[in-house]
Image (cartoon, rainbow, N blue to C red):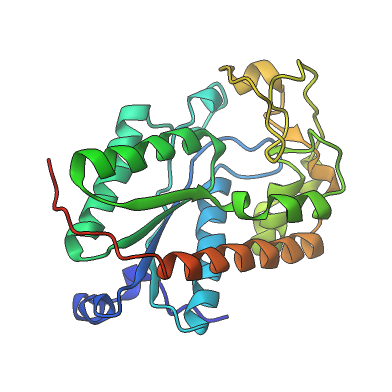
Amino acid sequence: MTSTVQLGEMSWPQVRTLLEKDPLVAVPVGAFEQHGHHLPLQVDAHLSQAVTTRAAEKASLQGRAIAVTPAVWTGYSPHHRDFPGTVTLDDTAFSAIVGQIARSLWHSGFRRIVLVNGHGGNAHLLRNLTQTLRYDHGISVAAASYWDFAVPDIADWRQSPIGGINHACEMETALVLATRPDLVDMDKARDHYLDRSRYLGADLVAGGSVTTAASFAELSETGVIGAPTLADADRGAALLEILTDRLAAFFADYAAWPKPEDLGDRS
C-alpha cells in the first residue's frame, strides 16, 4: 500500500489545499525505551507510526482527507531508565512537547487532531493533555492508544494466557516481526510473567483496579513482561490488519463529528 498521507512529504501549498477538505491529522506518539534482549529501543515509536500510517492509508482510500505527522519518538518512560539506552521525558516536558505539536497543527488550521499513542506510560498524560488543551487553550483533540480499538480482537488473537501481553510481549514482538523483522532476534526472546497481586495489572488488555509505580528492573531481569516466544510474523501481519482496520474505522467516525469551534489559543 503506497503512502500518500505523510504530512512531512507535503509542501505548504499542498497542506493549504488539504485544509480546504476539513482533514484529520494523526500524530503517532511513541517512546524510546528498552524492550528486552530481542527487540530494539524504538519499538513504540515504530509501531505507533506503522499502525497509524497504515490506518490512515486505508481511510484515505475510502475518501477521507487525512495526514500523518512523523512519530514523537520519545515519551514518558522513567520506569525503564534502569536499562541502558532508554531516553525519557518527564511529565512536564512530555505534555509540553506534544501539546506544542497540537497547538501548531491547530494554528495551521487543522481541527481534527488525533494523538495515537503507542506506549502505555503515555496514556494517562495524554488523557490529561486533551483537557489542558481544551480548557486552557481552546483546542479540541482526541487521544487513544492504538490497541484500545481492538481489545476484543486481541483477546481472540492471542495464544498466551493473561500476562502474556504487556511489554516486549507476544503482541509487540509479532507486530515488529510483521513490519521490521530485521530488528528482531527471536533467539534472544524469553518469556516472563508477573507474579503479583490480582489488583495490579499484568496485561496490556486486562488491567488491574489499582495503579502503583515500579521500575521495570524490579519486575523483570530482562525487561520483558509477557510471552514473546509465541510471536510469529504471519500472526503479526494478521493482527496488524485488524488494528489498522479498527483505527481506520475510528478515523472515519471522527471525521463525521461536528467540527470543533475555533475558540482561539487562550495562552
